Structure formats: structure tokens, C-alpha cells
Length: 236
Image (cartoon, rainbow, N blue to C red):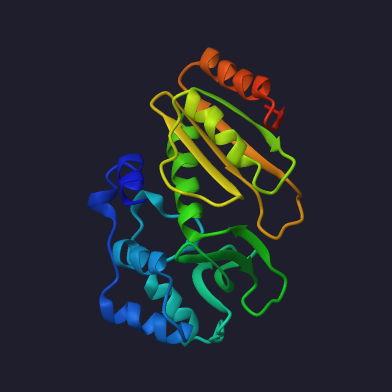
């Protein structure tokens, strides 16, 4: 994960700043349980500043998390831990860990109002959220040519059937992911896929594809379609 972020996000090594151990321990006491090891790594690396990886209106800093609890914007809860404050007052959906859905030394990322109950799940792990965001922002969005659409399969794990197809075209997976997310990259192209955990969207995942050559993108989509392991629908 660290290797992926450092080579994807410009000057991240010079910009990110971690939280001190005392601050991290304060967050762990609020959680009332050991922090997921990935979140501890995140706080150690980016708990003070995420550099160019920072979100426009979401503040993931440890200081902001602690301030929200000190101001009693949110109350300590063994199920939910606030990990990012949303500053958009029109849609104040703050980001929480849901500890009832642990996954791969991490936990499910969901959003809700500070005292609300309705959840909007985002990613199965914070690791996937950050990696998907980095590749989307710094590879797909900056690519000369892009395409988007959806993939559908017969089972919840249908993306495992796509893995060998992408590998045969020279794509690697920079981090391991669960059934709702896939990240594929090679020097001239990158493809990111995601679905909403617990969202009731069935066996369907949205994808974004970016590359340096339009012909290459067409060939990639053509190979996926001809392999017939997933149902491909291109919307852009």
C-alpha cells in the first residue's frame, strides 16, 4: 500500500505527516478496542497531513477526530469510530469505521450524520478507499482518454473471474482487495472497479478506465467483452 501511494501521489513522501503515538493512543481509548492495524499505519503516516491525497471536504486528521469527540459532536461507540469530519454543511455525512464488519486488518467504511442512524457504505476497507481514490485522481482522471461503465457477474465474487483476463493483458493488482473492489494497473492504463458493500446493488460493479491511447482502451474493453466472464456495459 505504501509503495502504491508513494509512486502514485506526487511528492507524498515530502508532504505526509503522521500523528504522534500519544494522539493515536487517545483515539484508541475512544474506540474502546484495538485499532485496526491498517488504521494505525494510516495515522502513523498521515494522521496529521495527507498531502495531495487529502479530500476536499473530508478531514481525516487525528486532531479533527479528537476535536469532534471533545466537542461531543459524536459520542464514543463500540460499533462506530469517527475517522473523518465532513465540512460540507449541506451534506454533513461524516465517515466512520463500522467495527461490526472487520476485513483484512481493517474495517468497513460508512458515512452518516453525526447523530444519525442511516448508513451509506463506501468501501469494505479504508485501505481500498485510499488506494481507489489515489488511482482514480492521479491516474484515471489525468489520463488523455477515459471510459466508464459497469461489470456484472453471476456470483458476488465474480471479479475473481476477471483477474486472469486482466493479467493476460499485462495488468497487475497493486494491493489485495475484496469482492467489492478491484484495482488494475499497467504503465499505460489503469482500471478501478467498485461496488457498495451492503448496498443491495447485486453482482454489479462500476468501473473507470483511463489510458494514454484510445486504441489501447478499446482493445482492453474488447478483450473483457470477448472473454465472456463478466457482462460489460460501457456508458462513456
